[in-house]
Image (cartoon, rainbow, N blue to C red):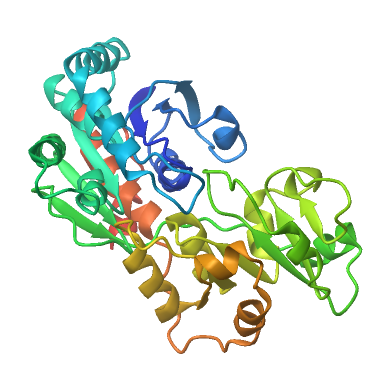
Length: 377
């Protein structure tokens, strides 16, 4: 018996998709014949080698998220303007989602974390489950002008849509989320790869005194890097997920290496990033040292930074030091930092979420593996 679930995924970076994939894989072990419609603007290439169940991509925008000038700068005025344009066509978008969900005969809606899908699922009378380590009302609250009533109204509309979820699963670590009436806390979601340090060292022809640094800032591309200053750091090789101009011997494009991003995350000596869910939680799970650059105005950043310092090894680099290439002191500090006293929490979030979702699907008479109860215990 086949069963189709509808997965609406925010396309703001890749963090939301990275949370959904392990949950769907764990759910596939419990639900025979599971198929997922991935309703998102995240490219199919992201899911191709990661998702083990049957799936199809339905490329439709689900929300705005934030408008950014690179991964570290949010254009607040453009973000509000984009949200207001999005909501001007709200009823048409909602009708389109309802019709598509019903045409697909969706058994369940999972949203990480588009509020559009939750409201549409409610209107279509299909059970909805939110999967979240933050919600968009919390993000927009950071940018809200108290005197602008349109901002307040838009946030309240978003919260009203979230409130229609039948259930929410809050992923550790997360800020306080109060938009849902029925919420269950679950553990961290991470599915790190196995390290391949020797193979990476061979591919780069490293000398014994060289250390590798993965410069990865998520799904929003970096617009510039201090390449000349990086090239002067003689004891480091830098791996960057964008194009590298010719003439740099210490900076390598990850696109030219035979490793996935996840494998590189597990295999380098240091990770340089912004505090985003997938990278931080996997780095902590792997006990990889992290040099991070904060934005200071994004809702999930404080709990992620706290989590990193409690269970991992993290060193902050200021935006100014990052842009001017003053990296070496932070890199050295990260490399020599002691392991934390507390072990990281086990990455049980995906199996916990799958067990909860499988219990909901039992209402449809689906044959579910008896391990469901074990996974929640």
